[in-house]
Image 1 (cartoon, rainbow, N blue to C red):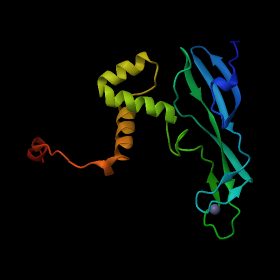
Image 2: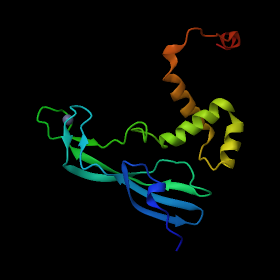
Image 3: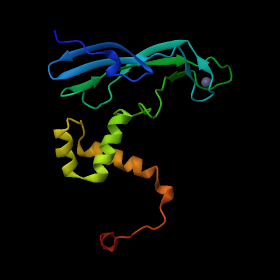
Length: 168
Ligand SMILES: [Zn+2]
């Protein structure tokens, strides 16, 4: 059996770590929220009555020279507000930690976004591989496109490629 890691070094403050295990070249971390309740996304009412739990496996940054495999324990809660149309909702961890449908943690996506903007395309995949950052071309495009879309309202001038006009 491998050595144990200090739990605080692999999880942010809002998570409790249920288990950390070193398996070969990988660190398996199993965090869950410390919060006893969650707020319904529709009505905002807080609920402590949870219905079930499931696991999310977002990609994350490496820990030292080891790949990190996160298994985030996520709970489904009952919304107890009588007039709310939503009966069950899933707890959320904040968009700055793990977005609602995020396939990777925000700290990973921030690194991928910066790599994509600085290097672009295939050099990113090769460089990310050397940094042990789990990213492929599809992920890179998705992250850069989504984060760039968020800032589109700031655009003042748009260039039009006449080559694209000829291609239809
Ligand atoms: Zn509700």
